[in-house]
Length: 203
Image (cartoon, rainbow, N blue to C red; front, side):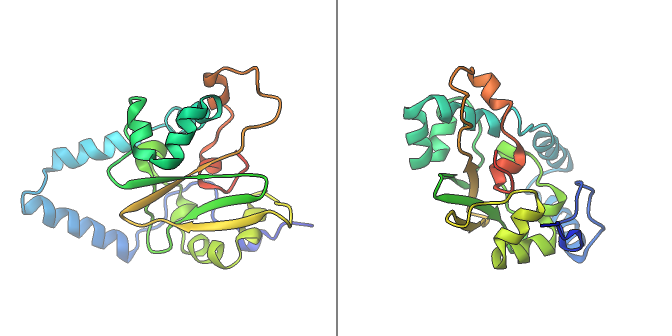
């Protein structure tokens, strides 16, 4: 079946145009700086810290570790924040829940209200994740949206859509590829993509 590009989420990850919400964000930051909650320098440092996060060396490392360490995987699914902190990584300040993909279930993440996202592990969200069309359509017709990303799932596989909030973020744990039993953790991490950890790709 040919893909309908007229409804595809915007790609590649070009910054969206200035919007009312963006102007409100700027105004709120100015107010918080004026009130002394943080300084402009601290804000720049926070942004730089987020920009320095590379999904291939942060989130992907968590996934790869879970593929080779059953105990870590169990702890990750039970208490992701604690498990990630135990391996010397920053899970972020919000509660993080890891969603395990299986042959029976595929998970995909969205934030229907804005762009809540596990930035400590994945950096800045891609432009399409913040796009209104993706946020609306992936809830209504997830299989169609995933197909536009090139991911076609078996009919018998259940698709579960998880809505992130300011207090709760999600990270998808993709299935480990077959035939990778001989690979080291660093090599496995190289197989994991940002889109896989959002759920719009297989891994």
